[in-house]
Image (tube, rainbow, N blue to C red; front, side, top):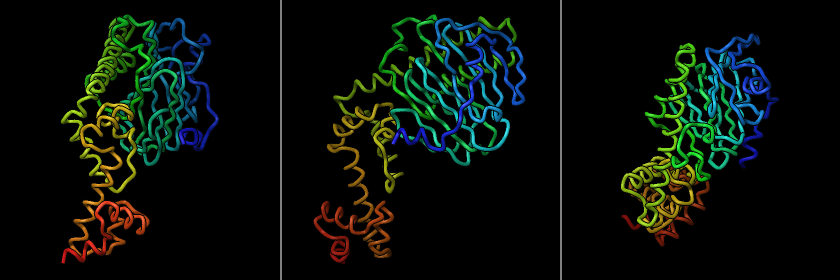
Length: 338
């Protein structure tokens, strides 16, 4: 399923400005007409493979500004017209994506290892793609988007190995929020656009702060996973239960639930079972049956309507599940209520 999501409506990709940079062209602003202008400041990143930061198609639908220094490359991409735009990425270093402004009529975002997201209002959201993972985002914008991509090579940044940013356990995350990380990222982007060469040292220092913010988030996730023996924390239980109740009639992936509380799908499933005595899928089923009981008690809806309301397109499947849980068919349950 993941491969099909990446292949969906595939397009021919154009080289990004990062590919030009790596072939010898200085960091630049690339306008739709193809005009190249020098960026406020620049450094070559030593030791990076000659691969694009992000591939965009159609390339003339966006404007791009790129700046780089040892350990980090930042590319600011703004949509210049309506119509579908595709972003692709897969490389050997980490990438943070900052959706500063992005509202779409239609689209899909996929990071390898996570369920796809069709969130429409992505503004002020963050996304993290660990090294070696594929990323594909396509959208038909409702508003002209502005997205900032940060490519990080921890080995070349002035950060301690103890931060954990080089750890292989870094997990992908899609459309999360973190105010300190967002504020630091937007400050870097603003300085790249508006500052001169005199702010270069400040921008590079902020790049190190950004890396530490990412390490902090990852550390928090690992601490949460370390609590597995005691099950979910109280706030995690509340968020998971509220999400299941809100999406009771929909298929819910373990990846989505895990991401909601900062855990991998595997850890979340085990912690949920520890907390509730059953896996998440069975808990959702029990909540569906409880909702069905309440609806049947009102005598206002047919069994078919109740089955659809709690997420069953097939009434017979609903009746089978209801009887397995309660020992009665829905009609018999209603009759017993008098």
